[in-house]
Image (cartoon, rainbow, N blue to C red; front, side, top):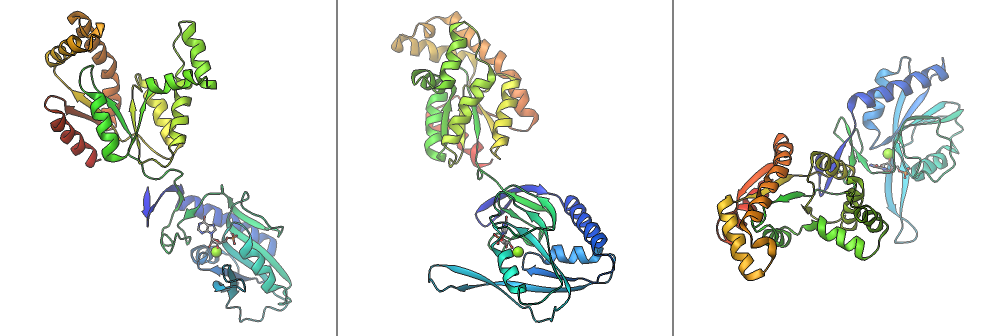
Amino acid sequence: MIKLHDLYFKPFISEEEIAEAVQNMVDAIAKDLGDEMPVFVGILNGSFMFVSDFVKKYPKPCEVTFIKLASYEGVKSTEDIQRLIGLTQDLTGRTVVILEDIIDSGKTLEEVHRIFKNENVKDLIIATLFYKPEAYAKDFKLHYVGKEIPNKFIVGYGLDYDGLGRDLPDVYQLKTTQYMTNLVLFGPPGAGKGTQANFLKEKYNLVHISTGDVFRYNIKNETALGMLAKSYMDKGELVPDQVTIDMLNKEVEKNAGANGFIFDGFPRTDAQAKALDDLMDSKDSQINAMVALEVDDEVLVMRLLERGITSGRPDDANESIIRNRIKEYYNKTAILKNYYAEQDKYYGVDGVGSIEEITVRLSKVIDNL
Ligand code: IMP
Ligand code: MG
């Protein structure tokens, strides 16, 4: 991943793939032109790298020149109109091949056609390395296309984002979500997970996704996914992971502009952890850390027994039930601890001390991510 100005981009087309696309264009054009000596016309600035590589590979004699897009204020003061400048050569009767780095809306191409209409060229051939069919809104024929790409902003290999990125030998694509810090929060019963989640949410402006809450919300509001989940629960069956993932996906999409998420109550299994990775990957994002509050069993038992006295929660009152819940927690999370530790993403945080002390320890971990 790279950052240019305020935006993040991910690797998209490698130097090797680009070289192959350029070579294919060279082969096709050289074959079609035969012994005709073409004038290759690059559209600056974006095409400089493409034109350079292209003509180096071109097997026969050719001429190379450039024209440039210039902005000037249009007749309507709000409208920024682009025009092409720099065509000084007489191209009467010549075979002209336009070499474009990218064709997007086709506005530039329209300008090219306008300029060449009066040049009495023999042939005007359009060749573009990259082409965004979904964005193209004109009818001009594109004779040679190196690579069709989706309608997303790219940089590198001559293409820039506000002046940066032209020098990169590979092409990068704008990430659909910008950089997020996503945490999976764990803690045994009584570790103070809820308290700390609330604090993290505030301090780092993260969205707390508690799977339990998401389920209750979907079922209460009778969403399609809620009804689907309920149909399994009513039969006493486990809700399939995909249903849960779909619900989480909705939550993530609802908050696409967030700084990140705290996942709470999910994943619980290896398969779920993998599914969560895939979900984040599909959003151009990632899980950065599994943060687990670590508290000694005896301390947990004492805390929960104390809580039982005031809360009246029956599962907090009985020591053997408490010990069982703690044991179950470790049985379940051990697998996930391994899963995230293998990716160097496991962070155990000492959960014994005052709320503020624990908060400071958590912040240290997150600030270092
Ligand atoms: P069009 O006139 O809309 O076809 O766009 C062509 C020009 O817009 C290119 O020459 C680039 O300067 C710029 N452009 C279009 N798409 C991109 C992109 O994804 N990255 C960088 N520049 C782009
Ligand atoms: Mg261009």
